Every structure is written in C-alpha cells, then in structure tokens.
Amino acid sequence: MSTVASNRLYLYKNNERGHMIRDALKKKCAEKLREKRMSQFASRRNMECIVRETVSAEVKSDFGDLDENVLLELYESITNSLIQEQYEDICRTEEERLAADVDEFMNPSVYCPACLLSQLSVDERSAKCQGCSFLHHFDNKSTPPTQSELKRLLSEGFMTHEATACSGQPQPMEIGGKLALHCEGCGYNVVII
Image 1: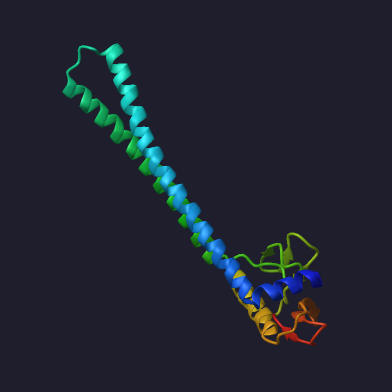
Image 2: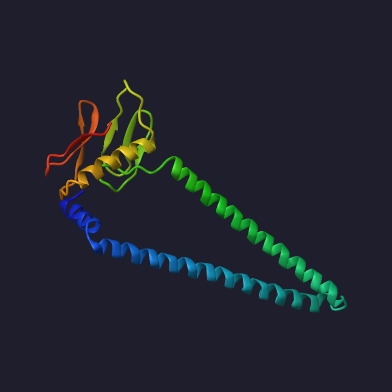
C-alpha cells in the first residue's frame, strides 16, 4: 500500500469524519433498502391489477356465459398461484443468501497483508494473493492455520500496530520461514505464523 493510501486510511480511521461518513453511508443504504421494499410491494399490487384485468378481458371474450362466482374463484386461484410462486422465489433467494452468509462465516475472506486489496487463497500448504505477488508457504512441521485463524492473526497484528499511532503501514515479510509483519517507520515487528 502506498504511503498516500496509508495516510488516508489512518486519517479515515482516526477522526470523527470517518464515523460521519460511515453513518451517512449506513443511512443511505437503509433508505435504498426501504425504497426497494416499497417497490416490491408496489409491484405486488401492480401484479394483482394485471391479473384482474387479464382475467376479466379473457373471460369476457372466451367465457362470457360463466357465472360470476366461477369467475371470482378463477381469479382467486390464479392470484393464489402467483402469490405462491412469489413466496417460493423469496424463500429460495433467502435460503441462498443465508447459505452465502454461513459460508462467509465459516470461511471468512482473508485479505492480502501486502496489497490490502485482494483476497488470499488459503490451503494447507500456502497463502497466495489473487491480486499481487504475495505468497507464503506454511511450515511443514506445524499444523497450518485455517482461513479464519489466519484472518484473526493478521487482524491482531495490524490492530496492535495501529495502537502504536504510527502512520506507516506494516509489510509482510518472511523471517526464518515464519510470516511476520514489519513496519519501517516505527520498527514494529511481530511474527504472525
């Protein structure tokens, strides 16, 4: 990460403006979600009007001799069928979202300690960045960390450095086969794994 980006990150995290920006973004996101929900509600109403008009037009042209009660039952049956389809779509979408949330919880994304932008691909032998040249091979003598353990260890290392109030950004380095974070600015050094 460049020093300009590092300084911006430091300024964002350590002043009131960062909290104001986050709160404003949170408020805008909540408003957008509310608008989307209202739009879906309106589309449900619109669907009901379309079904009513279509059934009415078709019935008048094809089934002019049917009783009004039969027509109402037909309308109700079509409406219930469409509501059931929408409900199933919503349930399927919700299940997919929950499955994605569980997957993210069980296998949290680990971001590269070198570029801080791309995710790491972690397996039993190594951790490799998908966006830069960072690659760390785990020591064969010990059990490799899981993805969530690696995320926790890297987060602790970066947070400990942030507590020193240094404006520099620690960089990953290999020391005797171990992954460490080192900051040139303050001399911070910690072995991660």
